[in-house]
Each structure stands twice: as structure tokens, then as C-alpha cells.
Image (cartoon, rainbow, N blue to C red; front, side, top):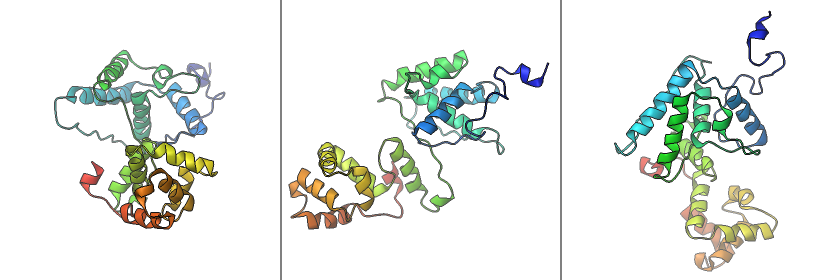
Length: 245
């Protein structure tokens, strides 16, 4: 008998698709989804992984409706101990995302009964609180003194919004005013898109024309739309705690 014979999957016939490193992010590319599926399929929910998931879910469910806010959870451990892997698996199992073939995160992972029960209860409770949502990402050293902005960028991206604060505010305003679809349709007709034009928020003629077409009272003419956007949605270096909440 060889060491490889004791494994359920032959290590010589299977490669580590993620190169042994779990990356916590909001990446929805096909490559990222393939890696996520591999990680769910090979997730060994035992030992400290199982204890961690159980504790987090129990604390969260136990505090629903009992306190004004949820206790935070800190995942600690030495380098390479699996902190990111635990966080990534929790995020995937929390929202139970669906893959192209209809399989879900929870159906792919092999989970203990108590974890399954907690996740089922999470689903039941979510119906009272507007559904399930999760955001994941890295603040990194690039956040500098702008931790709040970096955190908001992660939340914005998880909701399908631009990461930049002023761009996300504009999109949220368009949604609130019921103008988003009209603006997107006008941009598409002109051979471009909102995603392409938002980085040039203050100087994009196509975007300014689309905004004016959707809301003629926004400015006297296209030339003044940019001025209105600069005043209303300036780039900022930081935001306050109330802005984050």
C-alpha cells in the first residue's frame, strides 16, 4: 500500500486548482467560480472548521431580534492555518450561490448535520429580514487611512455597484429616481455602457447626454451636466461613520 491509497482522491491524479491559496473576493468570473466549486467539493468540514462554522452560525442566529446589533467574529490563526478558507466557505454557504448547472454551494459541500440545520434556519430567518447577502474582500495596505472607503467599496461591489464612492452614489440615485434603465438604454443605443462611462463621470459626453435625456430638468444643457455632477458627486478622500452606516 502507498500513502496515496488512503486518500479518497488520488493526490497524483488531482491538482490544486487554487494552488493551495484561498482568495476571499467578489470575483464572479468563470475561472473564479471554477475555483470556488473545487474548494467547496474538497472542503473537509471537520475539526476546527466545523467548530468555527457552528459557533459563528449559532451566535448569529441566537442574536437575531435579541439585540440592536450583531456581535463581531474574529478568525485568528497562524499563517497558512486556513483563516481565509474558512471565511470563503462561510461566505459561499451563507448565500448558497447557484452554479451554471443548477448545483448550489450547500449541495456541493459535504457538511455535518448540525451545520446543515443552522443553514436551513438561516434561510428561514432570512425571509423575515429581506433575504441573505454577503460581501467579501481584502482591505489591504492600499486602504491606508481610508478604511471606511475601502470597506464601502467591498460592500458596493457585492451589491453590483461601482466600487468608487461617488460613482456608486450616482447609480443609487438613478435607481431611486427610476432612471437607471433609461440611461443604460440610451448609452447602449450609442454603442457604449454605464460601466464604461462611469470612470469618466465628469467628462463623458455620452453619459451626460443620457442623463439629460432621462431628466431634462437636470441642467440647462449637456455642457452643464458635468458641472452638476462635480458639485453633487465629487471624489472624496474619506467618509464619516454615518456615511458608512
